[in-house]
Length: 337
Image (cartoon, rainbow, N blue to C red; front, side, top):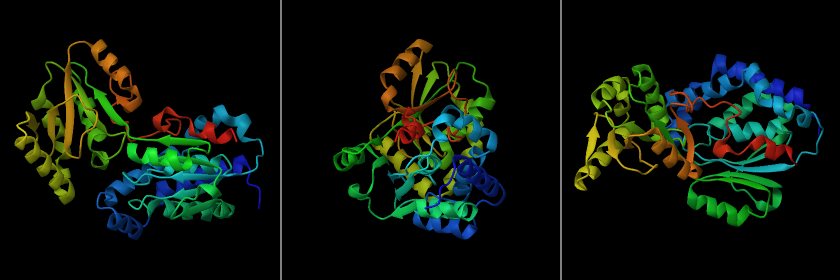
């Protein structure tokens, strides 16, 4: 098998980023993705692809790889890395795909049945740029523990237990449910609240990086907040989202829950991190130290935090290459072999 240097791998991905920024993917591919998963609208798919493309800008790739330079240039014997990918938002397995290949290993990927179109299409574009990668990219219907050397798996808490049972004897990263939260400061400006809408509603709120819980100051101005969020009301035009909104509203009413309704989402005072589609939980706080304490106590269940001294609003789904899921350095894990 032909050796591909670290520089050649990096160049291939940078060229892929340039191609995707200019061309995205054909509409037929986007339509096929939506036919497989009703939540994968062409708009959402393009959004995900452009996020990938932007992350592959040469300067960003250089920043990401700088801490690993001495390890990357060492020639290593490629091993087979099994990757079990989620399917909650478009091409959500992209970062694992990138890390496995940039580390010089072989990718053996089990795609989610809900997201089996986009990543193979992107892989084909990559192979056109660097044909030798065709021998290193394998999409499989089942992942046999006997034919891989290590595994990276992402899924629900129940799925994580299954993964641990079947693949736990291998070197592994196994991810499970996490949720994201936002901390709203007193007198938060409308620009920040508008950007928060991206964190709440991009991809219909289906990603683990989408905000599902708000920490609000006690004197929070709900009317102003709802006025600012009106730009996202087109969500309700999606029939699947509208059905979830109506269901969550009816469920809250039937349980006599106190909730707020802005016409396309319901907002419930609830301490839980997790919330279903079209519903957002919130709690009030008097002191910022109370928020910090609550977040620290639930840190293992939190993917990212928006607001104040954390990520800026609007950045939850604008993931940088060095922002690893669950805070686990995937590339370092792969370079240790």
